Image (cartoon, rainbow, N blue to C red):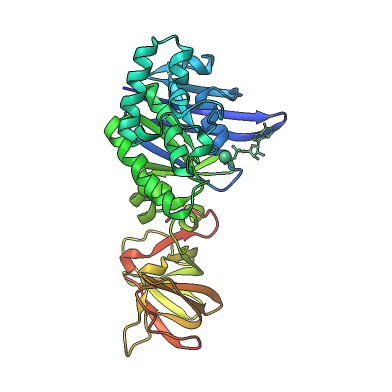
Length: 358
Ligand SMILES: Nc1ncnc2c1ncn2[C@@H]1O[C@H](COP(=O)(O)OP(=O)(O)O)[C@@H](O)[C@H]1O
Ligand SMILES: [Mg+2]
């Protein structure tokens, strides 16, 4: 059982504040990812939870008890680092049992715990090897094993897969997720990789410059990004954005953008004349309704990127860059001019001035 409650957390290095009042409550057993660009404060936030960085103000509570002044070794929290931080002169078994040895756990018990965890992680054949004789994925698993052996209340992961090649990264993200589900240990996972965050997490927290932009279940964030930052950060290829103006005609609502008038769901509340940004995901566009141009985006194709499973089709709509993602082979070629349409229910509308979702 472990909950983590972060309240109004701030961190300054000298006069420069890098974490600006973060609030975040993590439920028992939850897998939460902190995601954001390099330098946005992910590691700093995680290290504050681990006790490796001091807290400038605010509180971190574990199971309702504030731990701001509790030493790292007494927090019962285990951290897995990007570089694994294994001891090169110790075997896999010694690396995994190291924290238990520090706690003076009897040798026979350490051996039993290490073997059980090695079994669980498929590391049994490697227990007597040294880290230099392991592959990247095996080292990563030893680092996980070292954390698991401690049976901590909370796991913290700081970009643990960044040093692995693409294929192994996918395999390890599945392993870590199923491991966490089996153990049920509350986990905070830091990554700059949105695909990792989306696929592994119960909840993602999008950080930007030391502030939380949005927190929510991955698909809720994808479906309803709270602002323009999140709209363009989550989703790949990124959401298309069009500057425009909201228009009303009777009970109908439209977005007037360059070269098109796009129908919006009637429930939109903003006033006529509001300056807006209209968003549409590349995967929600399809080749337009034949005959009428009404309600469709003009599109001139400039470049096709085939990926095999899908095609990313780049071009311009009016004066704006636009990407269309289609399953399989592209039916379009560079130079083609077509119309594209999208289900109004899948369009996103933001206030141009505040960037907030309307
Ligand atoms: N020890 C430090 N001294 C001064 N500034 C630091 C220190 N550690 C991190 N920072 C700054 O804090 C910000 C957040 O860093 P970090 O948490 O490492 O970002 P991330 O992990 O998201 O890439 C960055 O601007 C970084 O330069
Ligand atoms: Mg970092």
